[in-house]
Length: 119
Image (cartoon, rainbow, N blue to C red):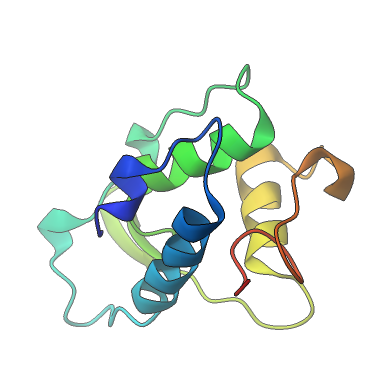
């Protein structure tokens, strides 16, 4: 992952950092599961979510830990995630990470459609 995720301040991310993160996530979405370096992938069992963090900080922390939310390992098996339909990446990450127990009003929105969409 690019250094945007390493330098982003989860407590106060700049709009520019969020734009760069959005672009990086678009690139990560295109990773080919057939050619990806399995050893470079993070196993989901190693990701620890701190429920005490505010939602935006948890999302950024999740991405920092998983490196690529579209392609990772689960118990050693490579997992490729894709999103279709009406739900956004924001919605899918919220449900997968937080069990859907939060509302849209709990997540800061940046630009049209959410913090990871183009601003």
